[in-house]
Amino acid sequence: MSLQTRPRLLNLAAVSLLRDEALAITALEYLPIELFPPLFMEAFCGSRSETLKAMVYAWPFVRLPLGGLMQKPHLGTLQAVLDGLDILLAQKNHSKCLMTPLDNLAIIHSLLTDSDLTHLSQCPNISQLKSLDLTGDLLTYANAERLSVLLEKVAGTLEKLDLNMCGISDFHLEAILPALSHCFQLKSFSMCGNLLSMAIMEKMLRHTSALPSLNKELYPVPQDSLLSRESINHRDLHSVGLNCLRF
Image 1: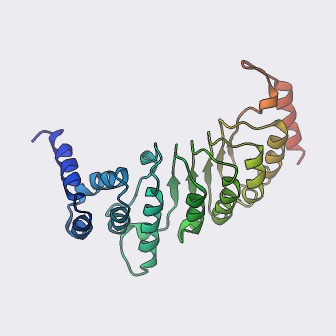
Image 2: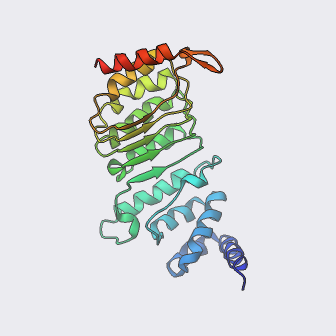
Image 3: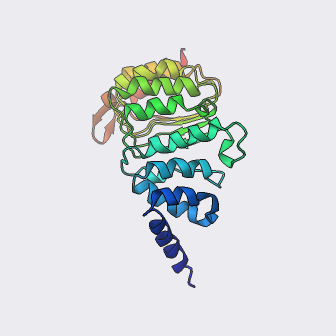
């Protein structure tokens, strides 16, 4: 059997198994470990919510990577996975790998809804999160308050926060600044690719300058400091830096 044939057979086995969702769920206990990834992928893309919840509960690996699967919106799938995590964590005596606290979460290039952010903030183990990457997740105006609640929930442990290309405006940043100010363990903060004004950037820097562990910051050039598409007003940027140092 060639190296290329084996993955193909595993995918075919996963597709065949999902034709009977009840049977697929029952079979998880006896499933070979190498069949879990292709079966999870097929269940995710096919929006098989019950299978997803059962698979998270039975997941045999230390990590459950979701970021790469969120390139396109799959309504209900993220909710199903998080529901599965809730069920797993509710079993206090369960010895599965995922009983360890969730410390790294990346959901990228997706369309997070209000309910997604609300559910994330309500997950029992989310309060021990160390790294949160929402790169490319376009936020609506209604998302701002939910994101603030989520940041408050993880403020005690969060060390790395990536909000690149999230469509964050002055309104969003204003809403999350109080929560961001409580992230005293934060070491790295990046929000490149967002359209922000000089005024809100100055306000943000006043808040982040008080975070004792923060040593890596990546920000977009303020929109009102752009003299043209290819020219930056360096005097304005220098002024922002000096103003920040005064606080």
